[in-house]
Image (cartoon, rainbow, N blue to C red):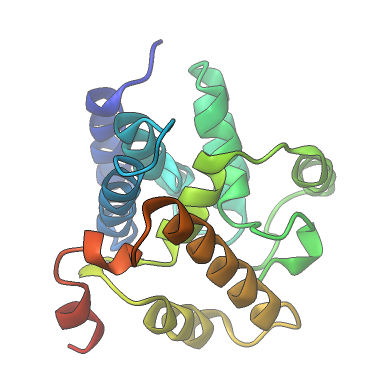
Length: 199
């Protein structure tokens, strides 16, 4: 099945019906941030970025879980022939390519853990992986936010991990990378970011 934004929107809606929660609106804002930034980056497709953003957490269709949603999303997309979306279902959580930098709980079997460990280590990240990683940290279910607000939001929910600060540094590095490409702050492309960050 060929993947486009309409299909991704439909799949996200079905997944939300299967497991209702704020994760779906978060995914929609991630997708909008991806589109808004990608359309100012030469060589990137705004529609592809939007589509990949919509599907990054699609594994949550299977119910409430921690890191299991990564492998659930990967399988969901692979079954439909969406290889890049499948990669991003895992890669979005690993801006540092080391499974030990996870801040979640590995509620998966040993075989799945070993698969994910190899996959993360061997994956070749491109601008779409990095963009979804960045935009995942720019979106709350209520709208766009400054990175620091999302950092705190995630840390309150998951706690402080030995890799927390290194993960923040990597996201800030990715932010700098995209800002150098577009020539100005990414926040200029996120309507309501100030209001939502301080609400």
